[in-house]
Image 1 (cartoon, rainbow, N blue to C red):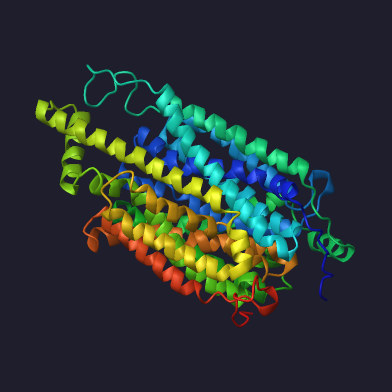
Image 2 (tube, rainbow, N blue to C red; image 1 turned 90 degrees about the vertical axis):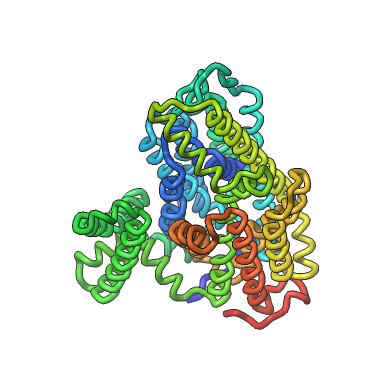
Length: 563
């Protein structure tokens, strides 16, 4: 039986603003992760080749937590705790704030990595219900405006996270002792976290919880109609509490694949020398295990033991069933996202290495010589004056490259803040699809041009194009998706959209290392060009994103229904 559609009132500017304020804190946290977490790992002794896998928390928690939370929140209504979505993003914000506060106190690398997993789980718990929250509140004609307002706060949060790191480093960093050796600053040990980093994380902790509390306080949720409430009540009869569901699902998912992975590595010890391959093997085991569980549960509906397992895994099963019934529009968007997000992760990882080469003239040979000098230094060897001078110069140039990468990232996020809402009337006039396609091509032009610009200030010009593209990427697709998915399953489908983001991240994490080593001659400038080409492909594929005729933004946004 079709669910009665709720008539949603139009909201004014400040109501939509207050609804989205909490996204600022969530994105401030993501901005700190994007910019500061890997350097903290390095401060704690991680090597460069270890960083991708140390950051595996992002794609794995995004792949699992968001669809699970989305499915559970779809079947939740708790007036005592705020409604359907607000309890989840409030819990996520509290968890993220506690982790942000504790992160700079990490005494060891393993402790910081563990906190990152919890921090990512908290951020993902908050993220997906927040996406669905906007769709729940707004009528179709205001969805683009609402998601572009959210895009504005994405830009604001990440921009200020980057600016806080730059400002606190400028104001509070302790200068190196000129008499100190190459391997020591004279004031802080090699593995310590600089004090100024603490202040950005403290600010992030306050922003995460403070802004979400504001949105929770100022924005009531729309209660379900009576028949939906009855459906929710029936669905939750005999179902474990949400926290028990989440923990049970994670245990069932991870236990068998990890055990099999360790057994394989025990039989083939050389796998520990290629940890990327071991991770791929565990992920393959995980997908096969999930498919097997799904078939067992579906083929044995009357077995009480298996039914209890099915109840425990219900959020994951619902996500799997939703994928099977996914509108054709989402399959087309998944193809776009494969290339778009793969290219974005290439950009975030290889912008500073590209600048070292294209802007500051550090070659791969220079990097290898620097690493050998630092390895000898840390081993206690005596370093010649020439080698010391060379290493200090390379380190200084590398720090300048990192600083300029921060300026470039801050610039494009600032542009995102400015243009996010300007894209709304443009989408209404020429159509969401056309705006999105053009913005993807602008981003491709930005990435393809960066390696060929040798002036650090001229490099800010492509960041303007990148910021326009980022504003569209963070708002337009969500507005389009909200128009084609079932209202009562908005949460689970928004979680699936996030899976379309993190799967390319997983693929890039395990595949791009061999690509840059064996195909791109270990050249970061070629990596950025590679990403630009992927954005071109994403733009071409986005031309296929045709909304149903009754969901078009304008007469120009034409095309056959994708459903």
